[in-house]
Length: 122
Image (cartoon, rainbow, N blue to C red; front, side):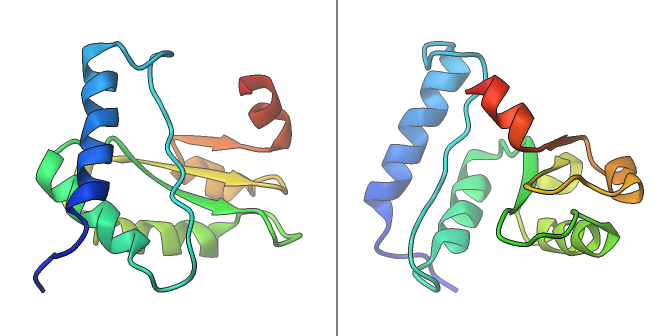
């Protein structure tokens, strides 16, 4: 499927990536949140950016609205979705959730952050 109409957004992402690679983007390492209505192309934009940049370092999941731990089912879903991110074969899997991650899920994650970790990082 052709990718059209998002060159402006790709330029913004490439500018951020350039700052991180050059070490001029502030703290070492950055996170960028894409926010938008359902089905507007957020995932497709990230897929195209990763394919063009060749630099995905991690693939993550946020589970915030549920009052249940990030568990093995969530980990399996994250691993499945990571298969669709070009170049992410070696990328680490990370998760953010309001409730703790289960022990089995933590074994498959490179990192997990809950509310306390996010507040400390803030």
